[in-house]
Structure formats: C-alpha cells, structure tokens
Image (cartoon, rainbow, N blue to C red; front, side, top):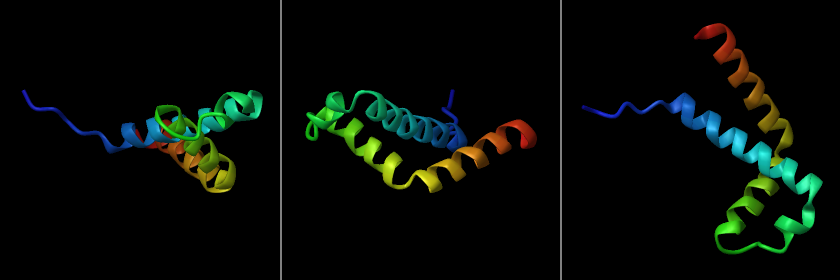
Length: 72
C-alpha cells in the first residue's frame, strides 16, 4: 500500500493555516504577539505572512477555490 501525495491538498492546508493565523491575530493580537519563538512562533510567523502578503495570499485562495469548484 503506497501513500499518494496530493500537492493541492497540502497547498490548501498551508493557505488556510496562514489565513487563519492572520485572522486570529486580528481578533486577539496579544495571544500571538507574546509568542514569537518556539512552537507558537510558527503561528506568529504565519500571521505576519498573511498580513504582509495578503493580496498574494488572497489571489492564491481564489485560485484554489476556482480549481476545487470548477476543475475537479
């Protein structure tokens, strides 16, 4: 039994993770701003990517949604 790697699923998870971290930072910035290192630092870094690169993240989310809805 071999595992099948699905790049589109991995991309979906990464984009949703970045978008969710940015949204959590918008609602409760104290939760992520105090933890810039360690395991919770990953959430802070993803939130920063989502904030600073929000137009490109939004375009990727729209392209992903279009691909899921109309191509598959």
